[in-house]
Every structure is written in C-alpha cells, then in structure tokens.
Image (cartoon, rainbow, N blue to C red; front, top):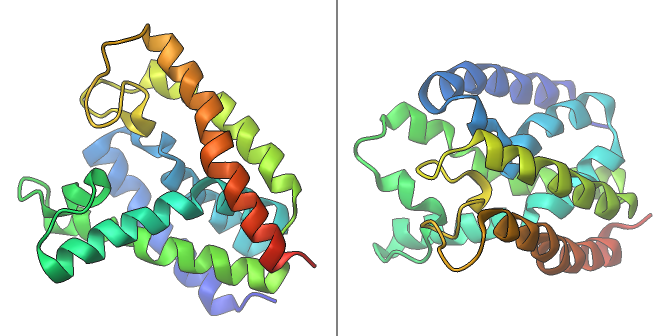
Length: 193
C-alpha cells in the first residue's frame, strides 16, 4: 500500500538527520515527541502498521499543525506567531540544521496520508497516552532547562510556581486531555475503516 520510493526516501532522510541532530543537539533531543514520531513513522512506513501511524498522529498532528502555522506565518508575513518555530530564524544555528528541521512541514502531511491509506486505529489514543507517561519523566531527567525538551521545565522558560515534578505530572494529564483526546475524535471521524 505504501510506495517503495517513499519508504526509501523517508529512511534516507532519517539516516541523515540522526547523526547530525545527535552531534548538534545531543541524544535528549530525540525525546521531542515530533522526533519520536519521525523515527516511529519510519517503522510504520516499512511495516504499514496503522497502530503506529495512529499513535503518532494522535501524539503530534495538532502540535505539528501549530508549528507549520507559526513557521509559514512568519515566513510569509515576518510576524512571530508562536515560539514553536522561532529557532528556524536563529542565525547561530547552522542553515543545514534548520533545513533538516523542515521535516515538521512534511510530517503532518505524511501522517494524514498514512491514515488515509491505512485507516485510523483508536488504540492509538491509549498508546499515545502511555508514551507521554513514559517519555515525560525520562525527558525531565535527561533534558536541561536550556533545552527544555517537551517543555518539561515550563512553557518557553522555566516555571517557578510549582514543584518541577508537579509540573511534569500536570503535563502528563494536560497533553492527553487537551491534545490527544480531541485529535483522536477528529481522526476517528475522518479515517476510521
């Protein structure tokens, strides 16, 4: 169901991205949910596994759309819409590194296309929630306040108004409720087979 050329092209891109990101950003950077989705989609493409595709769509489709609005909004108007894509204009970051980050543009397209081809599996909601519950505590331990992967230290800057682990617990509740659940309902309505 998935063309071989797409599987190969996606895999080659990921094989280029991994060592570059590892060298520049360190291994904790791969705990970003979008990076997890990029890697997991490699497996989903080769195995044509709709559960993996569904899980990643529930996890990152909404944030990826927001990233694209922020990126293209600033690209077209010069106005900074949201902080998600602000690093794409950071002159201290090499152009090739920012170029690799353009995977955020084609990741949501690939997710929607895969769901159109394979269908949506509602089990994706449960697995995505489990992934959040596992990844966020690991991210808190592995990331730094500067990197702030998955905003485990606060949105854009370290939060000061609650215990750091309480903040992680809040994220573990809020992300499934406010991101995963609405996305699940939309995907189930449009892509269930």
